[in-house]
Amino acid sequence: MIKFPVDLEDIKIHLTRNTFTDPEDNIELTIFGTGEVTVGPFGYSYFDEERKLISTSNIVRDLIAEAMEIGFFEMKSDYSEASVLHITSEGTLDEGFEEMLDGTQIDISIKVGNTKHSIYAHWGYPKRLEEFLNHIFIVCGLAE
Image 1 (spheres, rainbow, N blue to C red):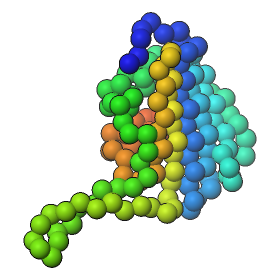
Image 2 (cartoon, rainbow, N blue to C red; image 1 turned 135 degrees about the vertical axis):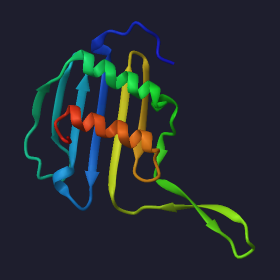
Image 3 (cartoon, rainbow, N blue to C red; image 1 turned 180 degrees about the horizontal axis):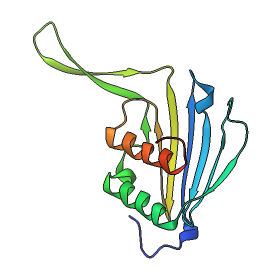
Image 4 (tube, one colour; image 1 turned 120 degrees about the vertical axis):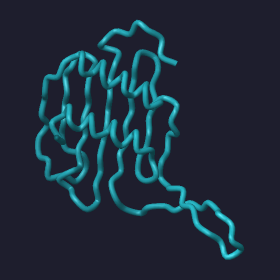
């Protein structure tokens, strides 16, 4: 549980994205509570240089509020398989799990004061997390 107040210097969102099929998307980004944003290459990447952007602490506040609203700090730490429902030959509904061997892998960690949570998002993660990730990419100029 986050204990407020928290100094802006003690807030950080860090994310890496590794896409096997499109190295241009392999990036590492950090958003600091003060509004500073860095975006650069991660691993094998066509993204060739680190960029520094300036956002605002109000935008960071909004991202942290959204993270709390979607339950980020309570989510599982690993989304590397997806639940799949199927009808069995006995006429029942059953659940199985499938793993994805390629595709986009995202590691995200958020630190607010002494509270930190990290998520590996590869496959089967909640749609609300996907929407949150897209908002982070918008803040960093990587999506519209």
